[in-house]
Image (tube, rainbow, N blue to C red; front, top):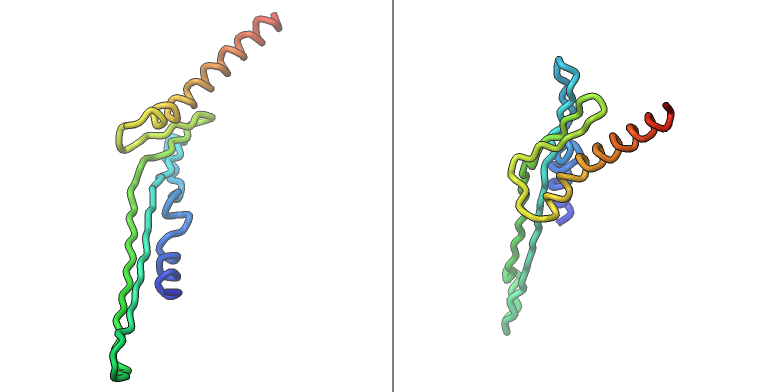
Length: 119
C-alpha cells in the first residue's frame, strides 16, 4: 500500500495541476490548469478451513488516476482571464467566470469617480 501511494504521489505534483507558465513573444503568459482525480482500493482474505494450509490467501489492490485539462490562465499586462476548454455548465461556473469582469467594471467606475473628484 505504501509503495502504491508513493508512486501516485510521484505522478501528481503541483506542476501537474497548475502547469509551468508559457511566455509568448507578445508578453502574454499562459498557464495550463488541470483537474486531477485519483482513487485507491485494496482487499484481502484468508480462507478458513479445518486443515491449516499456509497457501490459503487472496488479495488485490488497484489504483486509478485521471488528468483532465480544464483551461488556461491568460495573463496580459494587469488582466487575468480563464479560458475554459469546456463551456460553463452550472450557475456556480457562470458566477466564477463573471467575477473578474465585475471587479474590472467596479474598478473602472471607482477610478472615474476619483478622477472627477480630483478635477
